[in-house]
Length: 314
Image: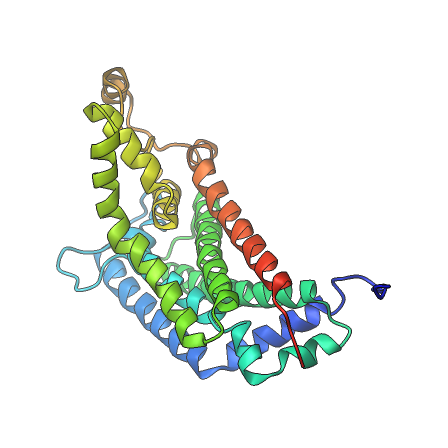
């Protein structure tokens, strides 16, 4: 007869989360990454504040995240986030499970009243909460610098758009944390898992855009159908979903993505150039934001199945 498991399968979950967050925040690896992100944020904010006017303008605080002067050696802050967030997420998760295997501590941990379910979810939430803490601190630093330099408080809509931008960034990091966790379970060596996760990131960052053009040319007939297919394939990448989400949140003038019909172009030309309300911007990028969150959940489900099927011996 199989032994009956007593108690909740999530017993010890928050103990694992607290331990993982403490390990991440006190590690040398995370300290180096945090320093790089802080220096990057400070550099981009310095050049952005130099180019912003001191007078009050509409959505001035949102321009802190997207402004990059022509003579600046650094891109806008959102450009750096698209590059740094995946690397930080991969660094948080590539050795989450295989590191325990190599240290021969996994069987000892599971010998305690902690189930596999709580252990894996605790490791994932520990990495996600650490990433959330770092990104929130940077977001607050940027808002504080903006208040100090501009001298005007942000409006309620600017704060809401900034918070939604932060949520989209956390969801984007959650996708790459899920990829790193899957690689950590699939490969026993941390170096192999890290290389596999970075290879996936390079594929979507560099090579996926090239393959999209080749696939659409071979399958689609007509220029409009080809553009639609390219857009659909591009949205399989978390980079594209994140780029479209932050574009709509930080730029209220954005009203649509992808190709437009001639009648739609005429309507936009005759329309009064007014910013899009926050509710409409949220409706515009709701599929992208949902896709990032769904991708995070799906990748954790894959890692959960892989981890449950692994044999763990003392």
